[in-house]
Image 1 (cartoon, helix red, strand yellow):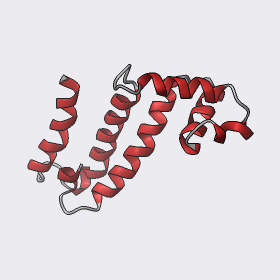
Image 2 (cartoon, rainbow, N blue to C red; image 1 turned 60 degrees about the vertical axis):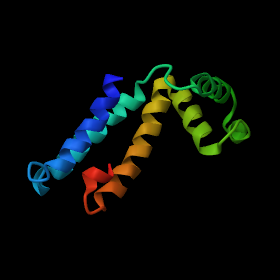
Image 3 (cartoon, rainbow, N blue to C red; image 1 turned 180 degrees about the vertical axis):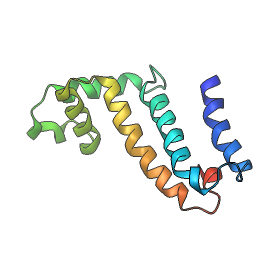
Length: 120
C-alpha cells in the first residue's frame, strides 16, 4: 500500500509547490516521474484480479504465428504480448511496454493542462 501513497504524493506535492518545479526542470522532472511510474507499473507482481488472465493471454499469444495473433484477443495488446515473447523478454516486458505507452500519452495530455501536476 505504501507504493500507492508514493505514487499519489509525488504529483500532489509537485502541484502544491509550483515554484520548485519551474519550467527549466519541468521536462526532466516529468521524465523522472514517468520513469518511476513505468518501473512501478511494469514490475508489479500478481496485482489485480485479472493477473491470471493476463498470463493466459501472454502464453496463448506467444505460441501462435503472427498471422493468427489477431484471433487470440484484442489485436494491439496481443501483438505486444507476441512481440515481447518473441524477443524473449518475458511477461514483465509486456507490463513495461504497456506502462510506457500509457504514461507517454498521460504525460502528454497532463502537460497541456493549466496545472499539469494536479491533472497527473
